[in-house]
Length: 126
Picture 1 (cartoon, rainbow, N blue to C red):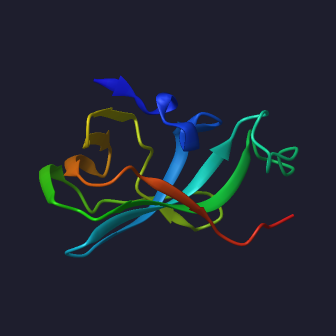
Picture 2: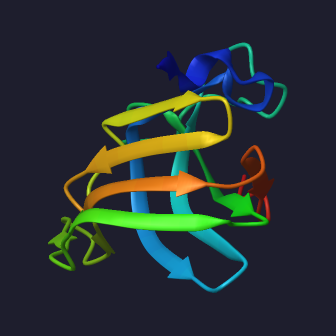
């Protein structure tokens, strides 16, 4: 399997330190709401806010035209950080082969057959 960095849309993001803040699933798509770490080469990158290690940007990672979703493990346990917000950990592993994607983190393990994922960036917070 190939690492997510090989997907053009994901080459300038760092998922291992991004935070999953929600997962929405329907018959046609699954999306991961994330506080996404933008690498320095990303066109939206800006210096980290005071008290933050990285440049974070709210985004959704969307797998559209889903043909099959297989939850190998699922956890709804969240973590509460110092400012009171809840997240479900990181995306520790994101690999793919052909049109199948495998993701893993504290929130669970999942196999998805779909179109290539896209990142939808939400309002920029400067």
